[in-house]
Amino acid sequence: MPARKLTKREALDLVIGAKILACGGGGSEAKAIKNITQTYDNQNYFTISHLDDFNLDDHICIIGMVGGGITEEDHMLVEGLKIVDENPMITAVKELEEFLDIEFQGFVATELGPNNSIIPLMVAAQTNKIAIDGDCCGRSKPKISISTTRVAGISISPLSMVNHFGDVQIVKNAKNDIRGEIFAREAARISGGSVSVARCPMTIEQAHTAVIPKTFSLAIKLGRYVRIANENKTDPIESIKKTLPEARFIFSGKIKDFSRIEEGGFTSGEIILETSEKSKKKLRIWYQNEYLLSWLNNEHYVTCPDGFYVIDSVTGHGLTPWEDDFKEGREVTIFTRDAPQIWQSKKGLSVFGPKVFNKNWTAYKRASSFS
Image (cartoon, rainbow, N blue to C red; front, side, top):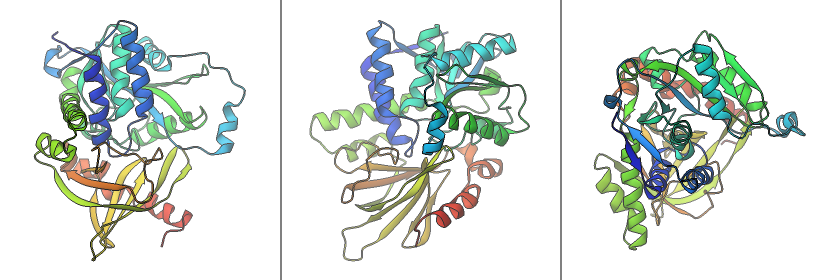
């Protein structure tokens, strides 16, 4: 099957572009760069292929990390445990292959994001397989139950979950994707905050109904143009506009306030932005791992499943609430894009529409100093 070999520079550009398109989540940029460096320093390389390059009866699965914020009490659950598995994602894949008695020909990303895009590329490189040029969200999302595979009717199970400490779990059958998410989230919580998960085994024929294609190619292109703009000291925002002509730039202002709560395997909070105009328009964003809901001057504004991108106004780089990106006074620009068609369907909105997060949003309001 034809495969595109990525240069190390293209892999790094993928991280830049994926962090922009991830809507705040998708894993650590630093871990992604470490994984790229390790792969290419070992004289290996990443490869990607389109779905059309596979046979319809080839098998693939989704691979990625599940996790988020945990409490100090949760951290104590792994205190004193030794790391015995340096590559739990590879172990998760092998465990699922053994359980199903099949061999996967490739892997697909759970979402588009800095490290969760790199994971299938890295695992494919280490196992002589191929990564799909696409993912199962088109952006990042806070739960693995929020997946285009769920909309397409592809079962989340069987799934395997492996951590660094030697724990291996196989869920033979999950009643539904929501329960599969609960199993994985709890495994992440008791594993120090993250767990490697291989799930949704499917054929390429099934994948055609679910995978959003060519998102890696788009991220590489976007990352390259943003990088070049910074190197040439030109406006990276203009580069983004040219690369994503369908994007709508909706807000530019400064960070006024930022809050974060970490518990239950999630990082949640609010970002408050204000314009520098006399009118002082205020944009409020609520995130649960990723940017999900927003209000402009207290009126409902952009929501999931649409892409909601917060970038630094000077560099054009994506920002994330997981790190120390939201310093008061920082200039940011926000743009949005319509969600892929699969998310705009009735079933898609029932999986990733704003109503899905009403309960989570209400719980956050009660637990925070929201006003």
